Amino acid sequence: MFTIYGRANSSNVRKVLWLCGEIGLEGYERLDYGRGFAPIDSPEYAALNPNMLVPTFVEGDLVLWESNAILRYLAAKHGRQEIYPEDLAARARVDMWLDWQLTTLITGVRQLFQGLHVKDPAYTAPEQLEKAAQLAASSMEILDANLAKSGGYAAGETLTIADCALGMFVHRWYVLPIERKEFSALQAYYARLKEREPFRKWIIDQGV
Ligand SMILES: N[C@@H](CCC(=O)N[C@@H](CS)C(=O)NCC(=O)O)C(=O)O
Image (cartoon, rainbow, N blue to C red):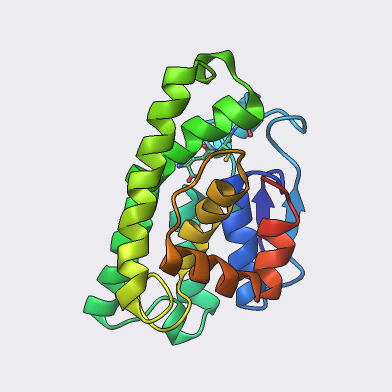
């Protein structure tokens, strides 16, 4: 089996734990590393993950960091076809949303999280929060428009690993104390994800 280094309240760890639940992986080891737990700036941890971030995934000689790379690996190895399709066009659509989550969607939501939840003074100024809220809303608008025509999930009619990456930040956006524009397809998507037991366990129940 494998080991996941990372606290269960980290967004990027939660994505991976949610996927493990979706594909029925059990019996793996998870070690609490990161803020408030075992240090990630030790030489031992840095030897595994030079970014000194969580999650880190270890399976024998294979060491992976970057949560979306871990999602791809686990889904390709253990998942049913539809969760990370082999068809090149279908797979590219999933990859597109995975990359968009890490390069675009994360930006505004992270700034809001740092300012409103972590209360990091670098992000708490009202004008910064306003800019972050606009940035996050513009990403949610793009996702909402896609969901209105996609068939229910980010890349089509069934859940894929793109949803494991996006759903975490949709949840965070809905629970942060901000004013939100109404996005009907996005709201329906969030409600649909909440029907899934692994989403409730690893995303909802872990808080913001
Ligand atoms: N792009 C990386 C980002 C990893 C990341 O930023 N991890 C955060 C937690 S979500 C972290 O390690 N923060 C420091 C800590 O927990 O001490 C990924 O997707 O895995």
